[in-house]
Image (cartoon, one colour):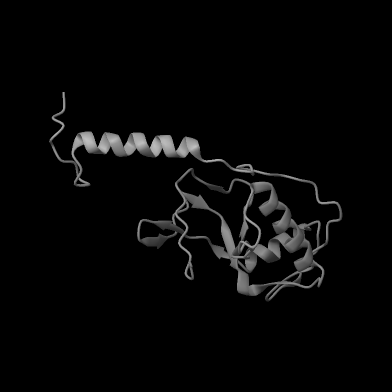
Length: 162
């Protein structure tokens, strides 16, 4: 049996640590939400984005074999975060990527389609009105047949996190 006066790594005694855990557990069950933890929907009128990739040019949809090969040629092996390092290891992640700066959306209506989708998702998830919810294009990942990304924990670090 643990001595309730012994101290843990967080500076709390075992008894205090159990009290904190119990209190946190109680508070979590008091949370009330108007939204869901996930959502889905059907887009009534899909807007073709008009994708253009430097240096390829316009990418046709549905994707042709010719355009798929061109995309692979314009890409590079996708790295991943491993602790504090960014590494390429095809035993963990076997895919290619193209940076967002090389990808352009030519259809002027594409942004309004995304805006409507973000509004719908925020509403379904119960996000408060006026919250700063936005979509940011980060990169295009290309998964060929046999490509993969092994199960892992994702730690997203935003450069301009506010």
